Image (cartoon, rainbow, N blue to C red; front, side, top):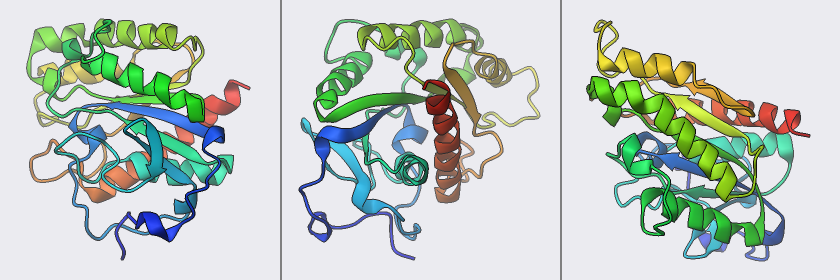
Length: 248
């Protein structure tokens, strides 16, 4: 099978960039992607998928994230599946960063911070369309410490609420991802179990929780493999479509 990528010369550049449905994807390594790039299935709707780079949108290809260590992630699988429902060209902003804790995503006014950088890109990208939703996949780093796990829900909720405020989008659809089983499920009293429960119960209006717990991981039991990222992207698309329909 061909990889989930294509040459910029394989399509016209005169896409209706002012009419994109734009989505912000952020978090840590599983959102930026650490799966194998080779051997992925072809995109069905590649001519309608774009990614944000250097202040504009360019034809989308993996890795979509600008994380220096990014590989294959859920971004294009999400966009390809969502286009099937919306029939509208999609712009992706993936500003995830591997190895980050929830405290590092605390909202602030520093344009160089994790939060500030994503916020700045989202505001800049709105020149080309409308921001339709955000997807957050983070927590693996916090799953090893009980204090971090116990504080995750309050910190994530505060950050996501601030994101809506800073974007002047109080009803922006948001998806929160429930991380996979790391450490293993047998550790029933582990910080990971505390974090998983907090993610499942997070209370935000106009939001949904999508689980990655049953998806296939690489041997490190931390990073999703290629099939896991593809399935996760499809789950994101279904959940986002429902949120978009409810917001009408």
